[in-house]
Image (cartoon, rainbow, N blue to C red; front, side, top):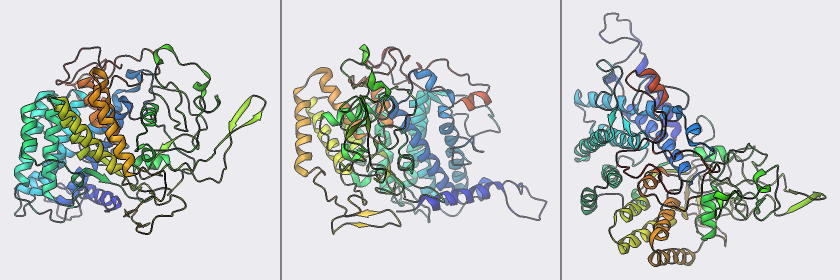
Length: 594
């Protein structure tokens, strides 16, 4: 596994190269304090593009997951909890130079670096087609996503500060068209399988055939969004897209805690000496628990075996809502607590932070490389410490979450997986038989990928003899959990068969809900496309409501990036979240679950 420490170090070097040099010649056309773009190292520029892109994917996936209940959203009012600064980092990482604040991780944006690579390639005898082609693919995907989240984006006047210091925003269809054009250009550049020339390809190790498959898969997701069935089917007919998990588009993390921390970011916040921070989604956990989904022990790691308000006595200190009856709008939904220690929070719950860091469910072994849930609870009982007062009692020495436990954070960032593409094909199917086929295929690929993850610290680090864990790199090969709690092949086959059989029997909303719920479950960890699916189809209608009976209109798009609004006189901020993306032609009061 390549180490992100090297990548980040190189980005810092690239920043120095772009901002200074040593010279005693004062008669220079190029400022000694600002190296020209065509003098930068193409490999370092490509590293910077990839890092900026990955950080954006983390943001998109987190935001989409929270709105679609795959992840926990902690606000009662949508507008107040999605302010204008939410997309500041994404915007600056996509476009601008000169970093716009903490968390951006790069000093120059994707567009600026792609333009620099184009200039270098045009003026050099060396063929940097690989660098430019990869950069254009990542830029194109970023532009599609900006439109999906904001409704519009900058393009025709972007990246030309000398002529357009305050670039206007182009419409969604215009930016989509530009992004498709970038994919066409990238395809031409990569057609001859150009060499990577030593570039550190974080995703496909210089394999241009895999980049072409990704390029076509990005076309698929974009044609899917716009409902262009003919174009979608043409890509499918070509067969050159991500259809096998071996071609999954993902970033692999490392297990280093310091200098720099290259672990999965969710692992870094869940496996700390002070316990787990953040919450898992009650909606997703309850659905997976009720269906006996074989992925549940991989997605979530329980620290305790019971939950106050569900199958343990209510506890005001740890889960205050456990003392109250569900409000009317939560009739039929899990309001406060999921049983069996699946201790999370419901959508919109904005209660404070109780002392529950060693009690609530943490991220599991997939995709964060945490711990596999093997029923090794911090406590197994509730005791009465005073008349009528019940508390959790646990052993302080128990290792539930903590530094280095589980897979050490050497997980992955799923971006476009073969299982996702199967669900896209199901979404675009015109008959139930085909949709059932792709439902099965998507579930099979998802479950196979998830259950391939192993926890090297399970049962004191004991693995079967054919398992190899490299503590230096965090890599696990041939690992098999020695536990009867691991789902068997028969367990998985039965679950998939029963789910598909139910889909074939159900009708109307029930049928669509089942398909959407399985799609959203497969998207755990990389939920970006769930936001698009939910706005476009309205499914699943079975999502739990917001904690607040009237949380305001569901966000059809986000507010424009506030930094850009402040600095660009050609842009005005919106006053609502109701602006619809051009492909979202549904009614104003939509989706139905909100």
